[in-house]
Image: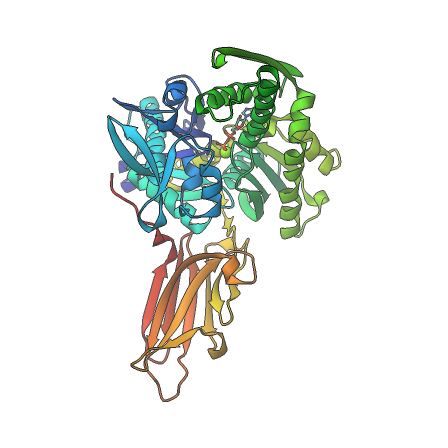
Length: 530
Ligand code: ADP
Ligand code: MG
């Protein structure tokens, strides 16, 4: 394994979180989670632009109160989405920084940077974060790092995966593999357990983070991980719990002081920071205090909150977390009793109220908390990076050599057929990589005839679970021109080739003429060079 792999140096594993990111690498036969210069194992996924510099992580957060509109968080939520996307419209309303529509409806973040107005795509902001994670690892190792495995939420669409790859490229990193976060966590868990368990195990990974929620069922047998099903919610997490607490205190402030702070971004930001801290405390204590000096118009704000009240404010959200658990079991055609281990991942999985509901759902089963929930994803990504680059393969006792990672499609992929019907070619939860070929029958084709009497067949690729394509997500389209043939009917073969990174290549071939056409559907977003 000498040669090219060694020349490219070590590869790192990056958990690119919506709220916190984490970096791990394989060293001395084990994973090391690398601490930042502040000594933290995780780095806030936050980038701030000032008159003189760009700040990432804690330094960005520390200046947020005086530079609110130029401090960008949650950029990951914009990756691979359009500005007019309903989700983007809904969440960007609450952000203190400005988002506008750029080329091809791409969302662009507008900030004041070094005295000028600048626009950045979500991929560009994310690349700044990736650069930071790379630097943390480089400072630790003292060498340059060129390659990484990066994780994405389990329910990511194709364009979100592609956007993450693009962000990696902008950061000067060769992203050698994109893996879903719960898959990475299951790998971390499996590696831990491998020595002690010889049989087969079904692991349910419950990953509740700051902004996303992923559930997956992973089958682990003899070092092979196979994701059986994934479910989740792309906008449910710790920030929603913070929101509830913020609303509660805004109301309390109104009653106490007859003043409404809800239109003051700076006051809200400070209140939110205090609420997040209080929430963390309530995972181990039953009561805590909030103290903010000069919150609004010189008024200090002091209050208390109990764990019981926090749970009461959020109980519907906690319950909502159980729905994807059931859906995931249904998709995997498994009963609760087939799950051997329930693994907690993500900072919000520390909340006692959430743990209680999950434990009740599994009829009192003990939950696994042996893996640090903040580090498990980066740990798994680092393991995957080491496998792919052949690190440690000279070591006979290495735990890595007999591991293999399988993965599944998070959403069904298909074609539009006549009448706007979604014709699924690759069903959700199919193991990746996969390839599917079909002959398009005439009654399925969507055709148009132009003035020269040329027939075009329209190939439109969608992802989603609804029966009508208009309710699903259009990934890409192309046209196939066929000359008026005497036989009339073109013989069109359509192939769906889903590669290991989740990148989909759709190709069509007319068997009668030999004409071929293909698209890589995730290339539909436009990236501006920095
Ligand atoms: P992501 O993967 O979405 O970036 P993480 O898994 O790092 O998120 O989780 C971040 C979330 O976890 C934040 O909302 C944070 O407030 C929350 N969190 C972290 N520690 C705790 C804790 N001890 N109790 C409750 N919530 C916590
Ligand atoms: Mg996470």
